[in-house]
Length: 499
Image (cartoon, rainbow, N blue to C red):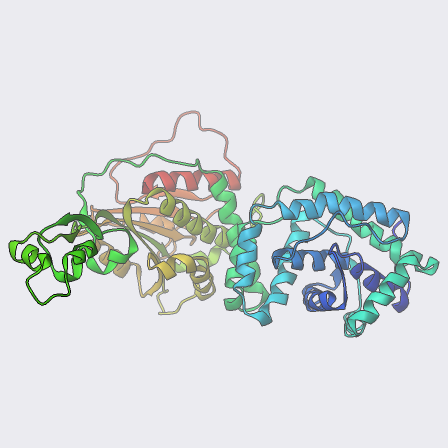
């Protein structure tokens, strides 16, 4: 039977004693001061707190302060001492060895100082979610704030006293249960940190409220899940078009130029500096002058070769019918529209890694409806955050277009200098204006690779548009896949077709 905190005094003892169990060498009032804003921000995230030392330890760990899990546990309840040791072995050791810890720490360090407590609170909530931890202790926010606003020295004194007092049994038993639940959950968890945490922290300053933050987390999680189903490498299909010289304004994006050799022809600013030894202070003719007149001085010469790469433009045309995909299907953890954005992020990441030898550009275009409105404005803002890294590099852009015809016309115009692929993403029902069924008869430029990602049902389907080939269903059709298997299959099909 779980122990319950019977009143404000037990809650105060639980909070102060929990702070004194932080695994940091030389715990003192100064070091405790940094933990208080983290706990207050965590309390704002959810009223149920884990053992307070978890928030303090996690905050120190991602802030670059080393922890000391081998420290002796203060003299207290034997069950609590054993639980803290298990927490050291299964939670702190796992966190310290997480491969994403450096990325998370770097993202937190780049946040403004005022946002870092919120970032630590977000990380604590995400770690608890990944653990599946449900043993939190409900505290009154007002009581917790009154306790945490006391001087740090008083908090430590109260905490160490509570750890030794016989009358603190309920608070100590509750702490022991929390530590045991953390250690037990950590034994079963696959990972405690991931790309979603680093990605969200990098964009935390730009997120508008908790709903957008959750949508961003889920889209990144969906992208991770889809990416895990793809092979590490895929073979690109051969192309008939030749390479084109890259535009001069892009010359800083990849190596070119620089000194390549030495010649006796050149300008004085490229003179090899060792030639200056031939100069003399006397006003008479020196050896430097003779070598200059004879053309024997040495100059550095530059490699003036033109960088040549194939141009690729991949356009994701997100049609207004995607509003019908704001539903959650059985067997899929996220909304259909969220997985669609995760699919875009997954393809951008993988194609950027696979097509490093090409001048690759991504365009995500949100098409307005017939009334000139943008029903997917929330998804557009989320997509800007998801692709912020590539937008800052200049390799991706998120746009709005009045209609699909303008998107296709621009794609056709780009084929003069690039290979162009367009993916239509739609979820409108068949038979509606602009619905997936109405796209099959669309005539596209033969030089544009046009495909449709049909999200009108739980299972996505990918179709090539404008193709004269008729696909026949086999006699013995396989049983229908689950929605998630359809998502993974569609992702692999799109990745292969875009290479």
